[in-house]
Image 1: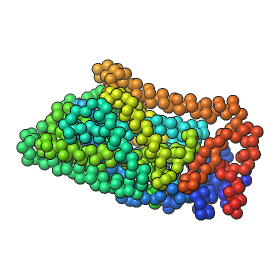
Image 2: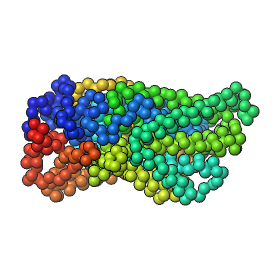
Image 3: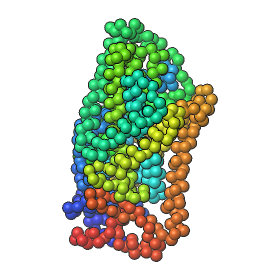
Image 4: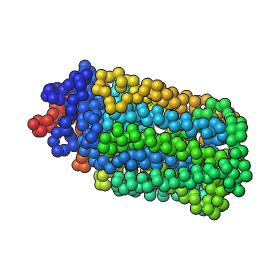
Amino acid sequence: MSFSSSQEKSLGSPRAEVTPGGDDNLGVPEFYIDGKVNFVGEQGGNGAQATIQDVSGAPVERQNPLGYSVGWWSALFLNITMLIGTGIFSFPSSLLKSLGSVGLALVYWPIGLLISLAGNSVYLEFASYFPSRSGAEVVYLEQAFRKPKYFFPVAFAVQTVILSFVSSNVIVVASYIFKMTDRTPSGWESKGVGIAALTILCLPILLSTKWTLRLSNFCGVAKIITMLLIITRFVALGGHLNAVPDPKANFRNAFQGTTNNGYNLSNALVSIIFSYGGYTNSFNVANEIKNPIRTIKKTANTAVIFVAVLYLLANIAYFAVLTKAEIKGSTQVTASIFWQKLFGARAAKGLTILPVLSASSNILTTMVGHTRMIREIGRQGVLPFPKFWVTTWPFGTPTGAIIAIWVVSFIIIVAPPAGTAFNFIVALQNYPSSFFLALMTFGFDVRKNLNLPRPEYRSWTVVLLFFLAANLFLIIMPWVPPPGGINNSSFGFFYGASSLAGLGIVFLCALYFVLWSKLFPKLGGYQLRQVVVSLPDGSLSHQLIKVRNDEVDEWDAKHDLSGRSLREYEFRA
């Protein structure tokens, strides 16, 4: 295969200026060759440095069909709005039950902050290698583990699509809505309200990215006001509220009752990390941000530190107003019990609308980020029908990904019975995520050892190791038996079932990969090759095709390393 001297460079050469060519979205890639290692450099349209990646990576979209609507404030509130979700209103109860003491419950929130800041640093360095690719860990796993080819894209793609539901937050929304009406819903009533909320929240994401971001910004401001409303009751510590006779009671002997059970400690850490789960959301839309590394570096850290302070003060307010028994008994509606004690039952019903709005906006921003992840998976070409996953028709939004999330969430809401079965599915969703995060972080050194130009941002090794240790903890500790026997889990049966099921999904992905990429091609007498597909809306994607063994050499001679036909270059010339 031959390339012009301007296209082919040594992998160790200084970073060249990668210049897009033509008026379309294809551009002119530059290839970096070093033995069997083949990289392609392409310039995006977001003002960032060129993205230099393995040639198997999805092609860079020089003009992003999703647009560049994510500015500084939108990037900030994409994180804030996702960070302040249902956790701060519902997790204080489960956290206190798991840890046993007020003191340790308060200590866990700063631990979550440190893990989140470390995660931001790791993500920032990965993003600086691929600033014109959205989808965050979709891209980082793809590029950190290039061998075996397509394995990690396949594995991550399958588990991401299967587990792409926002059902847990939807159920919390339904719980708060019924709390406002003093009605105890049946299982199907909760499901019905949840499905309605899910559908309503999908509509703005489908119709307009710009208006979705404006709605996210508005909800972010509303969430901050909600948190401040809780924190202002902090004056209860001064004894100024008649409803709180002894506001300092929970802070005397604050560590009394602390558990030493590993299962409970790990469950509590999972809850904390879930509460901070939005700190990387802006990385999912990196190719929709002008100068993404500089913007995300400021907004991501600002968001997580600001929210962490709000979290800690809100928890102190909870413990100042409510007794330990009241918090433990509040399950998913801690905030409602808090307001009821301070303002009375009637006022508490009205104020419950605030966590409803908070949880709803969390679903909104979660889907904004997750739809970009699924679309980027589609652009890798490993899923069937790539055009469905990649298209932005008709509204300039990730249509296929939105439909996929709605369908999977609908199934998860409707299929399992309410209660313990649903708890199992939520736990199942968490374990593969920790597994892939640990692998992604481990793969960081794999990327660093390649002879590539220095990125715009570098993370400290100690930060990397700390983030890796946190994710390894989340993988290992769920195997510690819970107190009360191996069946005393949150879902009512064998405590390791969710972790086994999560690993089972990864194993099935590996089996599918072996069949799809190794066995079937060998039996069928063909090899897989990738081609670059351009859609009418300007979207670019890889598509994997079958090329017969006796035609492989001819096919390779007519295409570049990334899958573009060499006739495109002749046409440009």
